[in-house]
Amino acid sequence: MNKFIIIIIFAAVLISGGVVYQIYFRAPEVAPIKATGNVVEINMTAAKNKWDPTLITVKAGDTVRLKIYNDDPYDHGFAIEVFGVNKRLFPKQETIIEFVASKKGEFVFYCSVPCGEGHFEQTGHFIVVD
Ligand SMILES: [Cu+2]
Image (cartoon, rainbow, N blue to C red; front, side):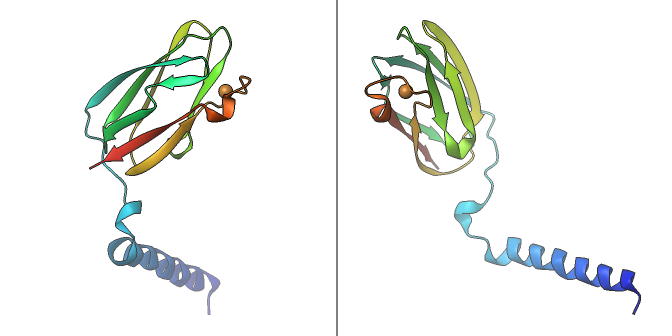
């Protein structure tokens, strides 16, 4: 058999397998969430190796605009792995981080720059609800 026919048959099986998975077998929690276009602005502070607030709740699909003021005289970092967010926060200034809350669930945010004693306790919870 012609090798191109084999490649075409293989591609057809692969693509139709993907379509069947997307329609019938994909778990709802891994389905993509559409952006709503709503922008939620949240003012945050990093001070003495603590976040304020430590609990943030937003709706799925919202665009989150975090305005984080680092009140310490040294660097911090803000990270939420699930949304691919990781940004350095320079001392005594505001940093704006924007992303879409594209997954439902409860996630941990943390300081991603070693900042001394208390660094590993500098965490908070980010909750995305329906
Ligand atoms: Cu730190």
